[in-house]
Image (cartoon, rainbow, N blue to C red; front, top):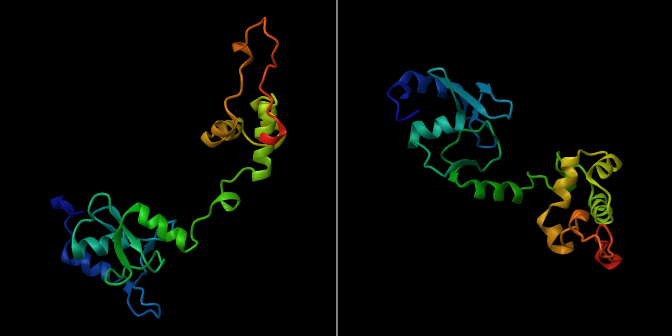
Amino acid sequence: MPGSPRAVPLPKAIERFWSKVDKKTSTGCWEYNGSITCWGYGQFTHFYKNYRAHKFAWEITYGKVPKNKILMHLCDNRKCVNIEKHIKLGTPKENSHDASRKGRLTSGENHWAYKVTQKERNEIIKFWYQGKNRKQLADQFNVHTRTITIIVNNKSVLKKYGKRLNPRHIHKNKLALSYAILPPSKL
C-alpha cells in the first residue's frame, strides 16, 4: 500500500472503506461489513489488491505496520477495525501468548491435527525400542509412517531412552540383541 505511488489510498477509497464500517455496536467494536475472508477477517480491495480491513484502517491512519510487528485484536473480533481501542501493535509471540491466555489456542489431544493419545504414544515408543519397525507400528496404530518417525525421533524421547541400536552396526561375533530392549522402569 504505502511506498508504491499506484497504491496510495485515495480519498474516495478511504471514504468507501469507512462507509462499510458500523461503529454503533454494543461491544465498542467497529465492525467491517464488507467482504470477509474464509478466516473471518474483513477484507477491503483497493487497486485490485486485497487488504485485511483492520490493517487497511491502521495504515490509512498511522502509516505502515513496522517490520516484525503485527496488529493484534484485543477484542478477539476479527471483523473489528477499531484502531483507537481494540487493535494494537504487537509481536507474533505476544499475539500467541494473548491467544493462549484467552484459551483460543488448542494443544495436545484437543488440537485438530492430533493423531495419537499420550498412552498410544508411550506404547509406540515401547514397541519401537522392542524392535517393531515403523510400518508395523503405523499399521497397528492406524497412522502414517511419518507420524511414527516424528514420535520416535522426538528429541525428548531420544534424550530419555537413547538411540535404538541398529542391527547392522553390531559386530557379528558378539552376542547381542538386535535392538536395545529397555528395562520396564524406563518405559
